[in-house]
Image 1: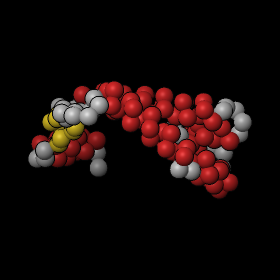
Image 2: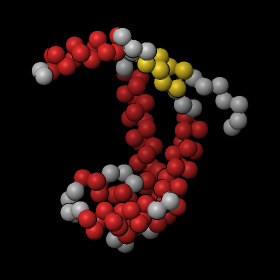
Image 3: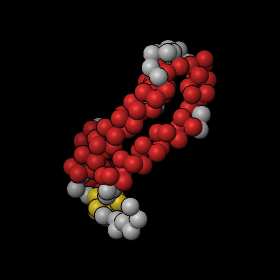
Image 4: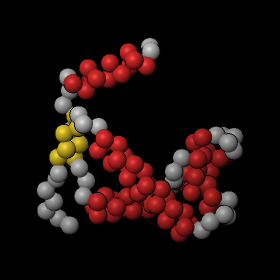
Length: 119
């Protein structure tokens, strides 16, 4: 399929659908990212990374995905566990910022701002 045809298909697809995004509160999003990254380490990302390291070549792209890359550095002694978690949080925050920027550019999304009762 040619690029122009793909673009036309995308335009038809976005026109005929209702796209909704629940726009996050930045502070709540940052806290959820922090909790999620810590849970990754509590729930076994270290063991999972060791398994991947043993099964994949050093240059495999999976070992460079955020979370795995930082854990890989921790396993190899290049950083502490605390710094691996901190760096994972930082990478996820940067990624979420990129996603938000992308969503802002796409006009077909209908944004919903949640009413937050609990902080």
